[in-house]
Amino acid sequence: MDGGDDSLTRKLPVTIRGIGVSRGTVYGQALVIDKQSVVIEPQLLSDERIPAEVTKLHEAFESSRKQIIALRRRVSDMLQETHAQIYDSHLAMLEDESIYTKTIERIEKDKFNAEYAFDRTVKELATMFAEIDDPYIRARGADLDDIYHRVMGNLQNLHHESLTNINSPVIIVARDLTPSDTANMIGQPILAFVTDKGGPTSHTAIMAKALEIPAVVSTNNVSKKVETGDQILVDGKQGFVVLNPDEAMLADCREQIQKRKQQEAERLRLRDLPAETRDGFRIELAANIEFREEIPHVKTHGADGVGLFRTEFQYLNKEKLPSEEELFEVYRQVVTEMAPKSVIFRTMDLGGDKLASFMTGQEMNPYMGLRAIRLCLKHPEMFRTQLRALLRATADHKARLMFPMVTRVEEIREARKILAATVRELRSENKPVARSIRVGTMIEIPSAALTADILAREVDFFSIGTNDLIQYTLAVDRGNQKVASLYDPLHPSVLRLIQFIIDKAHEAGIWVGVCGEMASDPVLAALLVGMGIDELSMGAVVIPEVKALLRSITLTQARELAKEVMRLPTGEQIREAVEKRYRQFRQAMINDSSCM
Ligand code: PEP
Ligand code: MG
Image (cartoon, rainbow, N blue to C red; front, side):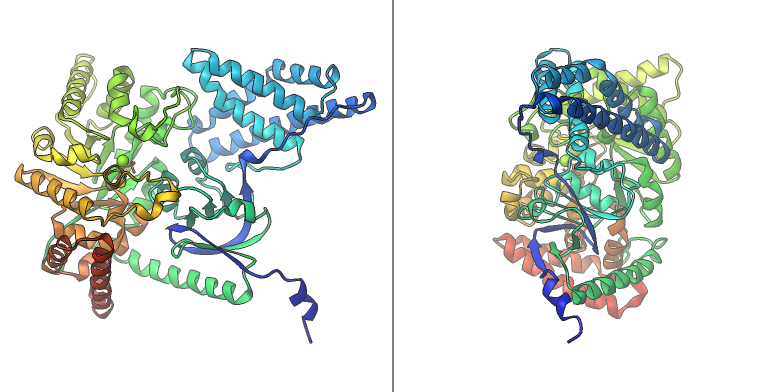
């Protein structure tokens, strides 16, 4: 029988389940990134082996140096120079004689193998850095960590490729990815990513959507089961990974890729049509962005503007605080490229899982710690630098700004005071500033939601951050896979809070949007419109789909849906009701191709 041998040697498919957080199906080779898995065994060398270990260390340093130089060039070509500067400090640290000579000493005098000698040297230095009370020096710990993994990878011949130095298309498999890791994915030939950790609204999931990379998170230790070079298939919608997929699975995957391409082409035809229900109710559909580089993408998907610019990403991957001029340049490009459409800048939301290297001092519970507006009010100089850049960049453009993680009205008042002082300061320097800038607040904490009537008197608009609102209302960490099944946007408490916020905003005569991930699910978008929302802001890629659905329904239908679900007692029953309606809406949409 033909191929008998082959069928004996071929490995069987293994399915690993997780949570699909960014749609799309792909297959390809895995690249496993596991920074934690370096195992270092101490060995005592015989005298004859010492020169060989010294040469090994020298070569590992030399390879690391070349890799960093290549990486720097690549990042600077593809992104802005500022993204590349971090590699200068890596290089400086690598070239600093003390790490190298101390390690050599440990090899020659103590007769330790190169890996162990290097490990000891770096750990000693890291402890020293951690104890120094200068935030700049302590932040060097992050650079040291990077250098450590690079040199160790070269010593152990692991050839761990950095996320910014990938040459052929791969599927990234990792225990976890930080927001900085995903930021480094821009422009890389990455087909998908799969992680052991993470939840549906973790920042890595959000970034994957923004970059249109299929992703599955919260898998059962995928990084231990898959090895670099393995052929895997990723389904980012259903949320599974198949190791060693068979030919039938691959054929199915190819068919889905083809189908998706056709659907995407059809959806893009919607680009210039308004997001309007069949009975003429117009909803603003805006895009969420983290980087200026996403703007062309925002435009091709027909966004009405940028509804959330997560400005904190300009602070990540940086060794020190960005200057006013650096920020000004990014903001100016964003408003110019988006003109005449408007941009909502959210002031930096650092903290939680978005930690900049200059932020020091670990917090036990960072999501409830010194995050976002709290951090800004504690460090008004840093806040003022951002506000100066924002006010200058938006002087001649349509822009608004909003504050994240507000829990009490005093925070808005204090932030507005600093804003007003910054406007006066810029005017006294004869710098151009917008005559007036609309100021809003995010509502993403239950205390803010429940005082929406009070907050509404202080601002021009609300934007509901459902990602955090859900986690704080339900006491479910948005990034913790152990409780991912409890993270429920349709929990009656969440819907009641949203309804309360909408009603109080409208009573006060201000508009209210949603910029959390809830807005990007077409099923939930219809429900939110029925509840009275004025604007929805989401990853650009889903705008056409949400628009198609809203164009196929009436406001009356959406309101009926909202009325029906508000009476139901459990999230599960609400989901059933919403999905039943969604199937009807979709059928109507397919039958009436004019909305497509
Ligand atoms: C949110 O919390 O819903 C939100 C949009 O903010 P982020 O996801 O950046 O915390
Ligand atoms: Mg938030």
